[in-house]
Length: 223
Image (cartoon, rainbow, N blue to C red; front, side, top):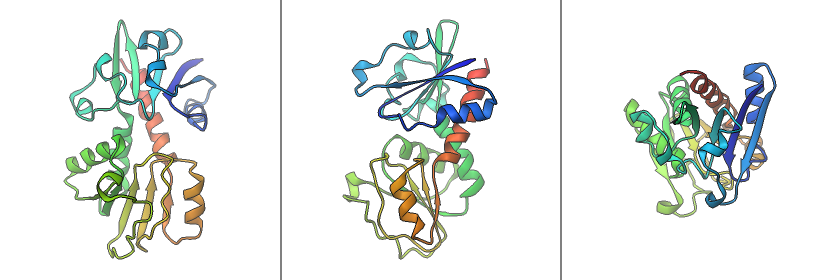
């Protein structure tokens, strides 16, 4: 049985175990390493005495940056979310980057793009858009104040609003009619309810999670 783990904070809602079992078509020994502070986090050596692959979610995607090797295109992101061990060394990648890049190229290449937030997922998204030569607008609390009630209804172009903010953020503003609200979070009840009464298309983070899981399995299984 494959032994995997997820490191994060307040991650009891995680659907990763189910996702991996669906992809592998077998049971997975999946451990949630839920820590309130970074000081509680064990070393990679301790983690990998019990698991074969480690995923990382917010707020700890920078925690092991100096403990792993990674490719140059991942290093420039300043965040990792997937680690494996080969011999005595640890290697990392960022499946957020790989999955978001895939989905933008496949579904949103010809959209007007608006990013909500300025955390690690926003930075990853901006790197991808720059690689593709795509323009975007960005709104964040640091620059724009409260963005939960943004009025974007005046935008006429076919648009995708990408919510990179943490789960605690709840959007209740006005959106363009020709709009997809792409939420990087999944099982976000407040957003699901909000968009039930709106005409815009709501895309939650499950498709992103599934693609991340596929890239993670490829990374763990390849030498």
